[in-house]
Image (tube, helix red, strand yellow):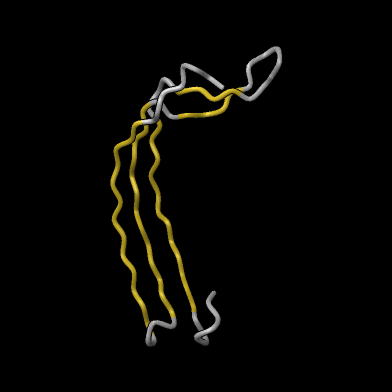
Length: 80
């Protein structure tokens, strides 16, 4: 462990939409997200032992992107 490890702090937002068709047998959705992490926790492997050690990043970590999904239910007992 790392006794100096601190919790991450984040700020961000997301917005999404979901639409169903055919009596909800087919559903599509999309979500856009944008966030910034301060003190992101990552794993480092310091020499000479190269033992995995968690640490906090000193720089901001920015994430953004789109998540897409589709769902199909051809019969009530089966979902893809």
